Amino acid sequence: MIDFSVIISHLSLKNPVMTASGTFGYGEEFSDFVDLGQLGGIVVKAVSGDNRDGNAYPRMAETASGMLNSVGLQNKGVDYFIQEIYPVIKDFDTNVIVNVSGSTIEEYVAVAEKINELEKIPAIELNISCPNVKQGGMVFGTNPSLAIEVTSAVRKIYKKDLIVKLSPNVTSIQEMAKAVVDGGADIISLINTLLGIAIDADKRKPILSTITGGLSGPAIKPVALRMVWQVSKAVKVPVIGMGGIMNATDAIEFMLAGASAVQVGTANFIDPAVTIKIIDGIEAYCRLHKVGSVKELVGGLS
Image (tube, rainbow, N blue to C red; front, side, top):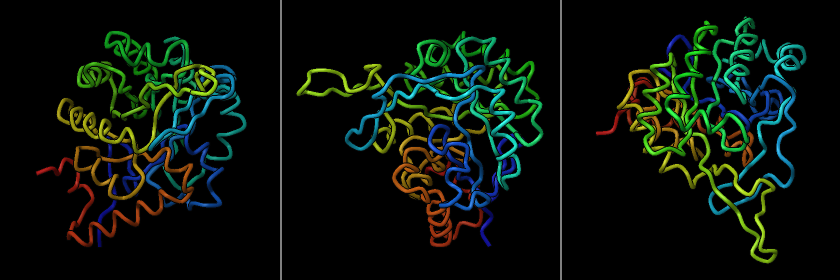
């Protein structure tokens, strides 16, 4: 028997395959395609303090080997989440993690404080790395001092596992990782999207209403792998890797680079059942290579 279990900080995962925030809704939207109980965890779409309408349309564009999005963290706020969404998802047979966003430190703290009271939510993912909002987002995710400040403020009031999601749009990803660990992060997830632009040559105009957007998909995988490898060497907390994972081989590469678990994002839009296929593929790899535990893969580059 292959041991697929993974423990990251205090989180116990059935296997290392999770879903990435913003690509899997609240989980229930995919329940017709995926047995949610087979997943290691689900990171639900971003939750902010108040209703956020998101950016104007158009806010998605297809690119070579990926996609650009500038959705802007659209959601109905934390109180709506607690009253309407949480009762529906709290009994999923997997780890349900809430992605917490904000425009100010006070907003991050207020949202985290309310989520802290939800018994069936074992962790939050602090989103300090979204490039698609005018305030917060990349401001916190690209400045080490601000990253420490917001992480420390949330750490003071949040009592469960604190995951901090890092932006790749920085000069030194190691510096950012060390900053959030100093601020109290238990786990680091990376990478969020790379900042990009799409242009309509006929109209001579940007395609996205916001001009720039976040690039995801296979195009960013080499960057993501490099950053996961660097961060896993720079800090001693567990790392969750993401960025262009389309199949089991991609997931295994992230684990070899140092990730204890992975999140699957853009691939969910192409194949709603891809996460289960990735789990099956990891099992096949382990059998072929006589790997007794997926933990053996973590940081396994020779």
